Image (cartoon, rainbow over all chains, first blue to last red):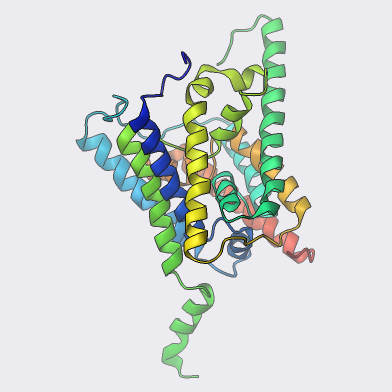
Length: 158
Length: 165
């Protein structure tokens, strides 16, 4: 598979799987896989979610700080360790606002929705269907706009 | 009521389910990200799975960019891991088979907006909220502050309109 440039064999796949398992177990234990608990937080009835996000960000923060400062390269891919720094533009707050309305309406976000399936929560498939439709809609619109831009012979921005 | 117990009572009101399970869950969420990061150098967010998986079935150019084609296989593995990890939790704690009471149109409509918003805004609660904040990225901090404010506002309005659950 020529496109599979991140594939580095069995060890790579197992580490991704192990990370996913721990991540998913944490989402289950934290209650985030239950929309009711997220909605309780957003309605100021239970502030426990602050500990979920805070705890997760502290662990990832310490890990990223330690790796970028004291480690060389990732053993399974040879990648250098970097911070997650996305460029800022107007899409960041616009997307955040749309995401926020959706999160406040449904109580569900992508990782938590996948985890909810693991609870046996078949009702959550509505949310996953919605997320795929939403992601498809924005990708379709963006691609259409890009074609218009190409037709106008403007330089590509991507 | 004895005045000296007031702060404790107030604290219990803020955390009716306690904090232990929340904190432990959060630490594990961070640990899952850390395992993948330390082993592979990859900073795993959960929402790119949506776009990269669409590349299997759609010809839309947006989904077929090299970075999605290169990562779509391991993103499927990551997501299956998330489902499996939550299943292990549910079986271990006797919660397997739990289903939400939140109405289907809230899940579908909210999910749609989450799908649009996370892709437009370059990340979700794990990408921006955990990895981005952990990286002290100003972009992520702005995104998180924005989605928190809008989510709280939306949830409060929906509750005020009497929609429950």
